[in-house]
Length: 76
Image (tube, rainbow, N blue to C red; front, side, top):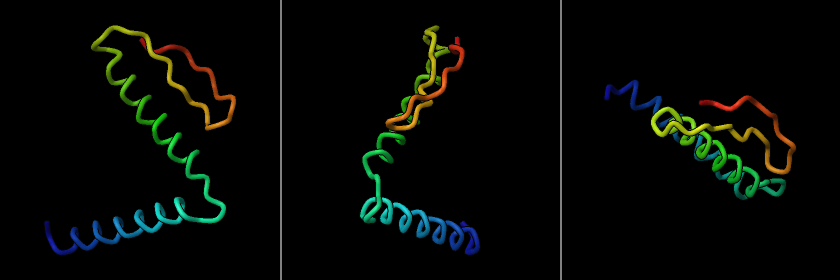
């Protein structure tokens, strides 16, 4: 990597690290909801990526933790 690219990556990594730390230890943090939302996003990405290969129908879960969510047509 060039010096400029390395500097940008270092700065972005630092910003993301501070934000993650603030979310996890802040007094008003909702760590469980953040972790659940990340897991749901990852699960949806895997399901959507596998649907064309497996032939399975997949409907993404777009609800926020504790929310009612949105209904979308099934993919596949």
